Length: 485
Ligand code: BES
Ligand code: MN
Ligand code: ZN
Image (cartoon, rainbow, N blue to C red; front, side, top):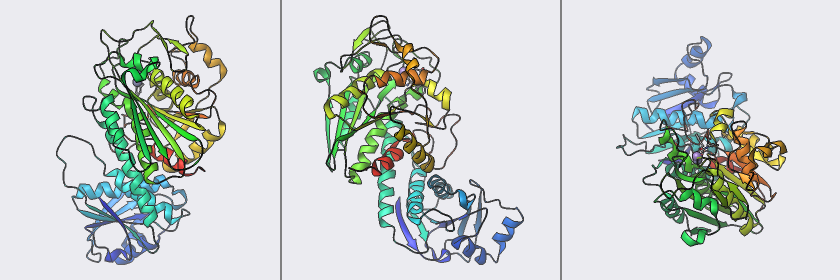
C-alpha cells in the first residue's frame, strides 16, 4: 500500500472512503467539520447515545458533502486516554474496514485535541494501517487496498512516515518468517532468508556442520531432523562502542522430539521460530533506520524431531561455555539451543546488553495468558524501561522474579544443570537455566509464548491479524532507538 500524508479539509479528500475518529468527550477539528457537513447530526447522535464513540465502535455513512462519499465514523474512546497503541488500533480499524468495503484508496483523519504529539500520532496511524492490512496465506487474495492517506490539518511528517514504513516492513517480515510452515521454513532456509538482509551495514555469517562443534545444545536438539541446524549470526555496525546482542529462538518446528507432544494443536509449533523471526525483523529495521549503534543478532535454528538419531532423555550434553546439562525432557529444547547462542554472543561479542526472545514455555502462557510477554532480567532498570515502552506501544511485558531459590529446581545429580525444573514456576526455571549462560552480563529474557501468535484468548486488535504477530520487533526497535551509541 502507498501511504501518504495529505493536508487539508475532510470534504476535499480524494479517496474512495474516509474515516473520522470521534472521541467520547470532545469534538476536534475533523469530527467537527464532519458534524457541520452533516448539519449537526453527528453531535446529536452522540448526545442522544445513538452512537457511542468507544474504541471499536463504528458507523458507516454516505454523504454527498464529502468527495470520498463513504464516511466511516470511528469510536476513539476518551481523548485523555489516547496512546500510541490506541491510535494504531483506530487507524487499523479504518484500514480493515476499507478492505472490507473493497475500496482501492482510503483516508483516515488524524485525531486532534488530545495530549499526544502529532509526530507520534502520524507514526502510529501509519503503522496501524500497514499492519492491519497484513495477511499471510496460500489462497488467492481478494482486492487489495492500494493507497492510504493520513489526513492532517498542517505540518510535515515525511520522517515519521518513513520510520513507520520501515517499522511495518520489519514487523511484516518477521510475521512472514514465523507464519511460513515448517516444510518451507527450516533452519537452512531461515539462514538463507537472513542472508537476504546483507548490505546496508549488515553482515551475515551462518555456521553449520563442523563449525557448530562445541555447541552441544544446538547439535543435540537438531540431531533428530533431516533438516540440519544452523547458527545465524547477523552483525550490524552503525556506530562505535560495544555491541548490543539480540538472541532469538529459532525452532522451525517443535514436535517435542522423543518426549513427543500430544498431536492436538501441534501445528502451532511452526511458530516456535518466532523469537528468531523477531530478531531478524529487528536487524532489518535498525539497519534501515541507520541507528548509531552496533548490534549482533544470533539465531540458533533447529528442528526438534523424533528419530533414531534424536537426543534422548537421560543424555548429558556440553554447551559452548563448557557447562553441562542432563536432559530430562527433549521438549524443553529452547533453553538448550539458546544456551549455546547466549554463550556464543557473550564470548565473541562481549555485549553490553543481551536481549533474548523465545517462545520458551507453556508455563508462561499459564501465568500471563496472551496479554503480555514474561520479562526476566538481572538489571532492574531494563524491566522498568521496557514495561513503560510496551504499555505505550501495545507490546506489554510483565516481570517475573529470578530469586536464588528457584535454581534448586534445575540442579542435577550428574551435571551442572538439568533441563527441566518440574511444573511449579516453569517459566521462571527456564529463565533461570538461560541465566547460567550470560556470565552475569546485563540481560533481558522475553518469553513470548503467549503473544507471538494469535491464540484463542488473544484480544482482537486491528493491527494483529490472525497468525504471527511479530511481537517484540516494535518494542526492541523503539528501545534501541532510545539508546546512546
Ligand atoms: N515451544 C514450547 C513452548 C510453548 C508451548 C510455546 C506452547 C507456546 C505454546 C517449548 O519448547 C516447550 O515445549 N516447553 C515445554 C517445557 C517443559 C517440557 C518443561 C512446555 O512448556 O511444556
Ligand atoms: Mn518444546
Ligand atoms: Zn519449543
